[in-house]
Every structure is written in C-alpha cells, then in structure tokens.
Length: 152
Image (cartoon, rainbow, N blue to C red; front, side, top):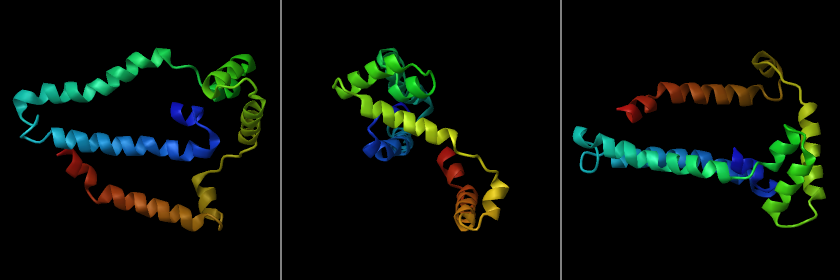
C-alpha cells in the first residue's frame, strides 16, 4: 500500500502487483524450505520459522525511517505543507505543484464516487456478466481444494 501511494501514477498499477507476486514467492519459498530435506522435520521447524520471520523483522525495523506518504498527508491529514516537503523528498525537485494538484483532483474524484450494493451490480446490465464471471471464478477457486493442498 505504501509503495502504491508513493509511486508515480504511470507505474502505480505495476507496483500494485508486487504484493501478489511476493505473496506467491513467499508461499513457494515456505513450501521449498518446508521440504523434509531442508527444514521440514519436526526438530528443525524453529529454523524454518526464524528464516521466514527475518523479512518481517527487517520491515519492522525500517518502518520508523520511512517518510510519510504525500498522498496520505494530503488526502487524510489535509496537511499541504508536509505533503509538499514529502513530494520534494521523493521526487527530488522543488516545484511539486503539479503533483499536489493531481492528488487534489484524485481526492475530489473519490468524494463524488457513490457506493453501490452487490444487488445493484447484478441489476446493472453493463457490469452484470463481469460480476457473475468473478463470482463463479472465485467460487470455483474455493471449491478446487487448493487451500487444502497448500495447508498440508
């Protein structure tokens, strides 16, 4: 989420995919390290846990040193002065008025968005098939047993 907020608009979608990619890599790494030949025996489970806890501890130690997100400062805290300083630190330039205006425009666009209920999505002919496709795909994913295979 932090990377998505600090990344430029042009690559924000690509950065957003990192979360999914790293989750898959983490599951794969856990599966490989859990093999009996590596750390998969009962006497070595604590090494497996310690190995997987290292990235979490590193992130926890680095977190206090990360600057606040300019988007968060503008949209949630309404602190334009700190947001301007954060943009200047991230972008390395003094004139960040264009970026601040983009965030203000994004904030205005979010306030005009109206939330709809799931039932309204099924009633709207323009998105009905997309909603049905997503619902069927996710139901099939839950019924295929992949989570049971990963847990065992």
